[in-house]
Length: 471
Image (cartoon, rainbow, N blue to C red; front, side, top):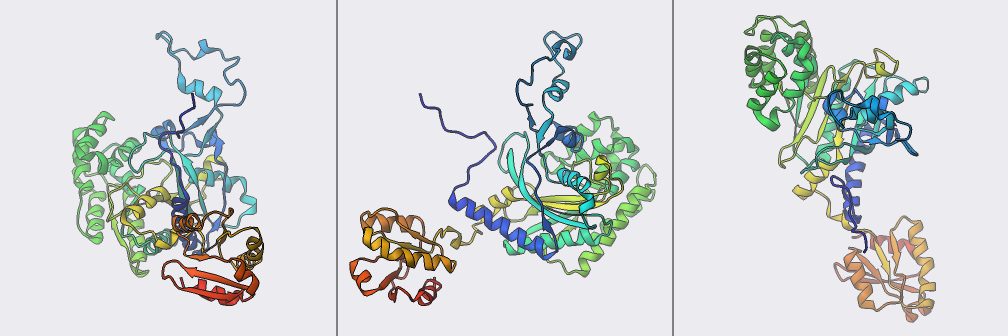
């Protein structure tokens, strides 16, 4: 019995049209990255597991795809040493997996980038500005807008603490989505402000638990976040301090002013947070730069924005599409010591990642892809037989040399079939040449949309190019 053709859940095939549409996204994003002086690098699909573990929080570690060591990875293992004490036939799967897996598929592009910077630091000039467009993998539960394999388009600068770098990322987001014709909202917060929240509610040691819970606010609502915070050991009084801050409204200046008052001892706890005040200073500086640069997209402070990755230390970003219901389509932030994990301390960086697959879904849903992307080739030469084929092959070659996408139908099939091929492939021009054209040294080309047909000397490539360029 034949095996059923299938792919793993959370992955997708992309046909010719879909690939052309995805390349449109990649090319648009690349063009903007380059205008800001970023250069492209690539890193391997797999990294040492030690590179990945512990960088994304406990929940992120669970979503890492581990790669089984080559050969018989389970041979020679003392399984008794991995038994869970007091439980029959139960093993410490986490420890066992580290024994049989020493590599994993990358979870994102930022941690591999930090590893790359440290490994190649003698070759780099700082600040180092790079972009990277490659797939990443997460062992997540597939659902709408969430995939196990997806592309990220990352842009980062490392080696500078200046918030001009944050401003550039905001400008890049603005330019990319203007070119893609998608209305978006850019939300900004600062991890120091979140650290300040943990301090003024009296649980500074619970900052990670608090940010992980807050990061789910949009998805599960405050009541569920409250339950999670209480389960993590916070008190009702601490949650009561957090709630009005997370629901704070008003303009940017009003939010900054109110938060400054709360961080300066004005909350119910009366605690002053120097960390939170530093974060507010950074936000105020960044929004001043954004105003001066006349950024066109909507930008707002969202004090509930947490970005649950542990390595963020300063500004954090998230972008949402305004006209299509989907999760965030961009995210990123400032990280002050990610390279320190690999032996290069105190090197600050900041970056943002464009989620290509979600952006694709938004453009598809809104009908924003250019119609011309469906055009695979510009001109099809019909095949009328061996002698006629020999006649048109040099003409096809001359047009290709000028950059025209040309196909020659491979078989001397009925003209109806060749017409249908051109139609299904959205090829706008068709050239049919028989013995008469070969004898007279001419070429017939027809615009299939308008019906206009012209005859050219087979050597007059320039005239053919003008006609083909009219489409």
